[in-house]
Length: 112
Length: 111
Image (tube, rainbow over all chains, first blue to last red; front, side):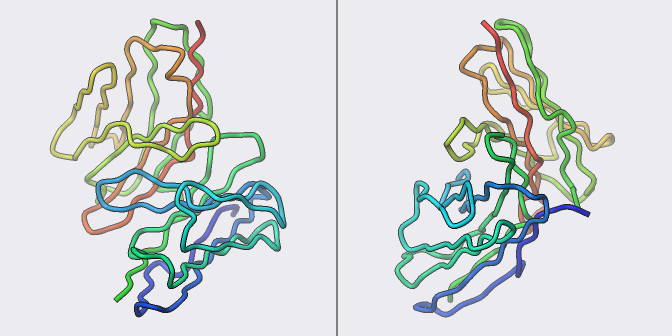
């Protein structure tokens, strides 16, 4: 079964700690994306990657970092520099040049 | 598991006519539904929503219809304009639960 997975579903961290959110896809998609959703707001793009070993900042990249060492994996690190890290994080993937995106189930990060 | 499905990857409509985008869901616990619009190279932006206590919500040219018994919702755009050309995502959530998204439908409105 092809799909996109995110783990864990819920994540709790203490303030000041870095945390890495996992995103894996077996759809053979070239492009992958990270979004953040806050209550009452739409999705905001954090980072995206159109090809392995390359990625670009989205609208709200400050305090986040990513890597794309493998086509199927696009982990997101929420660093201690991110001022409001508590949010729902969504990963998505798409075929290069196609705008429809497949979303993962999301990870809800709570920083205590 | 695909709890939210948009079975039409693309739709083409003439300017001035009605665009109807469809979305089906499987989880009967979903009680809040949203439509997002996405232009190329941008993140999706919120368009319109509906809660399960209603069967219709209207905002200007955009109307969302919810059929709970069929687990189906649709977005109607009347009249369609070329600027409406974008990818539209359907999303659903249950109370205290996270949102699930469909894969999107690309709408092309031809002048």
